[in-house]
Length: 147
Image (cartoon, rainbow, N blue to C red; front, side, top):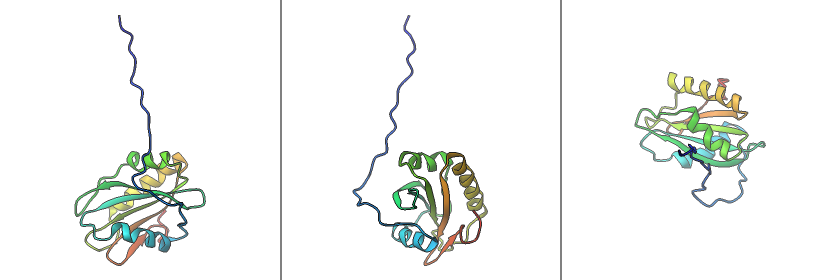
């Protein structure tokens, strides 16, 4: 009789590009916007990204959580927080684009932000802001006291 032996797993975070130590610190929505603009430039579909931050809000790393369609991207807390836990993040900046150019958040954006904020509180990872990128403008949930 063979004994059951469950599979063993190793979880790792793989750096996809070389980086220099970060001198970028997120202090407000404007500094977040300046960091995010080149990442979202020219995208024709909705992308949801996270920026992992250390305890002093310096950038640790960036991860694309989801690439969707022109009008939506599916995002689940599990996929958002997994890379943040692996990079030992203390805080996170959430960001996604609206290819239409209108940065006004939808009701789904608001519900997702609340869900991710609540999940972050359970895990000890502070959601600093959720920035919705439009064409030459942005919407900050933190600036509108929605966090």
